[in-house]
Length: 258
Image (cartoon, rainbow, N blue to C red; front, side):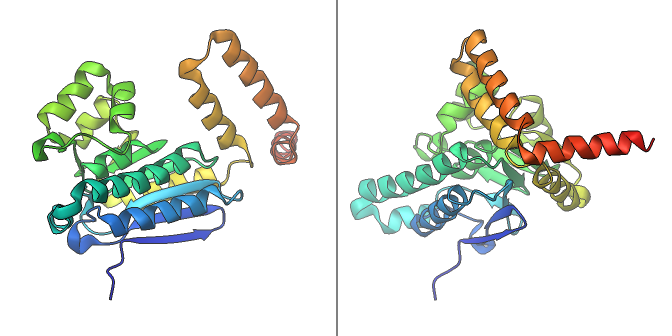
C-alpha cells in the first residue's frame, strides 16, 4: 500500500493542503511532488476558493528532500530530481499566481524544500517552537522551490546568502524579526489562531484578496504611475461588484442603527 503524502480537501471556500506523512517527517520525494502539484492545480482551477491553508501533520512541517529516495534513484538521479523539481515548481507557480491567498501554518521544523515551500505563502504563521533552515548547501545542493527568488526579496541579499550558505537554524522569533514569516503564536494557541486567520480571509467579499495579490505582485516592477493606474482599476471594479456593495450596504445599516 502506497504511503499517503498529502491530504487535500475543499469546503466553504477554503482548500486545505495538509502534508500527511509525519512518520517520514513529511519528507519530499517524487510521490510527494506529484500529490502537491495535483492539489495546487485543483486549487488553481477552483474559482470559488477564498483561502488555501498549507499545514502539516506531526511535529515537523517538512524536512525537505527525502535522502533515502535520492540514494534509491542514484543511477538516474539527475532526471529523477529534475522531475521532482519540475512538479514541485508547477505546484508553487499555480499557488503563487492563483487568486486565493495561501496561508502556511508551520508547526515544526521547515528545512530545505519545506523552508522554500513555507516562504511561498502570502501569510506564514508559526508555532513559537517552529524552526527554519535552508539546509541545501549542507547536503551539497542548491536551493529549489523559489527560495533564491523569495528569500532575497524578504531578507535582503546579504542575509539571504548567509541563510543559504551557512545554514543557521532560525527560531520563530528570529524568522519573524528577519521578515520571513508573518506571525508567531504560542504552541497551545496555534491551531485556533490559524483557523481564525483562515476564516477571516474566507469571509472577505469575493475578489478582494485576488485584487490584493495582483497589486502586490505587480508592485516591484511597476512605476508609481503604473501602480496608481492599477490600483484605480482594481478598486473601481471591486466597488461596483455585488459582493462589495452588499458589504457596504450592511455597514451603512449597522451605522444607522447606532
